Image (cartoon, rainbow, N blue to C red; front, top):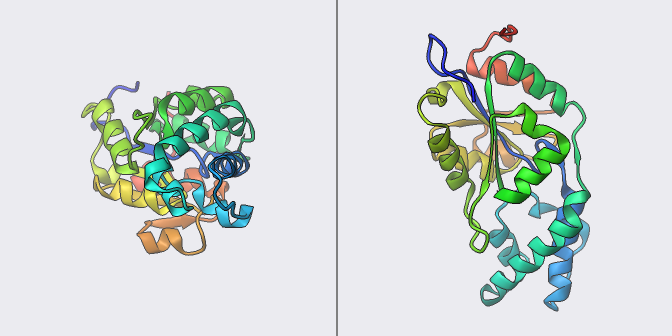
Length: 235
């Protein structure tokens, strides 16, 4: 973890995982498809299931026809299939490592904040080397009752603590769905929208994103500008 400098904590960036750092749609959609088939429910097309990337698991299952009484069963089915198959149909977006490396070199604190269950998030970050570029990985701790993004963001801020969490003006969330925007806003934090991710057109802007970035190439410059960092490499 990075220690605070003479001007207080370094700027902090919370990074979503699915649709922001990783292109994970095929694996997630495939696992939802297995859940619906196994439960004997109508299976939507890949296009209709595209909206499942990002929102919490319970919300997605209910939205796609899983009865409330069978949500727990659906969660177990999803997580089992995703652990064995879905998570491996995943890749980093080109340019992500370079952008994160630039932000680290500029002295920023980086952390992953995802709705994925904690151990799966850690496993994926380790496989792609993301864990070496961030100060911590925060996912959902509740295996059976998935929580919302605001809860994950709150845990990240509390765990990092006042020595590593600056004022909201020097903190940003980066995410590709409205849940990232709303979850960060619950803690007074603005969001830079990852426009290369899975949000439908205008979702991020409508949710209140400070700015929607068109490509990963814009990520590091936009973050540095938003938090008032110079981009100067820190020894």
